[in-house]
Image (cartoon, rainbow, N blue to C red):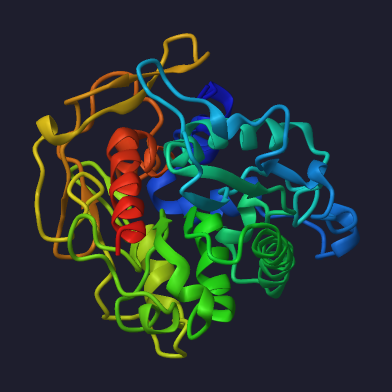
Length: 371
């Protein structure tokens, strides 16, 4: 399921391989820009027309699709019975080409990676209800390696699709149904903006069981006040958000720290010097460290990359003082070949803790409905 080519691309290891011997440590930023940032100017027409979310084909996952990768479960797990909640999931970046600043919906590689992420991330929530996941014209990976105006335009275009998809989602679910929000990486970037515009201070906020804003740094003081939900501080808590970024030790956070420190938060305040949100997915709270024995199951990719198996007890986790989620020494073979620079296990932010995320969502949903 977690295909070799995808993981090499997202980790940037293809660049490392091609450029070995000419100073990766000195020139990694320039090399990443060279490999992934589009050469041409932003052109919204390059990604095709906006998706029509009244059409089922515009969705990666939703209850009426005959084939839905988010319904996948590993052996020994059960899917949802009664739909207790509706899940709105926004996938991460799945487009790596320099051809366009945004992914065409028809791009075959992007569609294949969307299926992969729906199976390894969104599937964690299919025990609490139906999952809705839009296909959207995501910004290409290179948009995150440049401060050019065109990168912001690409992200704006991608967000416009996510925003319309959320409005279609809200219109089609029962008016009193509880909601879980979930995203990863670029998906989290768009969810944060969506929460600021359509959740904070609205009746929708009271319906949010929890928001899983994974794989992107979130400032406790410069972002959270604009999101309408506080960070979760206890397992089973509702109307709160969870966030983490997975690093093995020794960790080098410099690349993400540069993005974080140079940015302006959703409140309009600078993020520099502010603490990041970290909620441990093994415990459901920020301050409690967990041994590997607390991990109910990580999704381990098979040697042939055709599927994954659930392996309990492999990986512990703790939130450190900087706001990173530390997983200790690099995990055993199966995860070790697909690591981003700095011991960043970004690709596996969900897979490392899949069964605990599943249990966490079920407990919070049950508590919400029992209030």
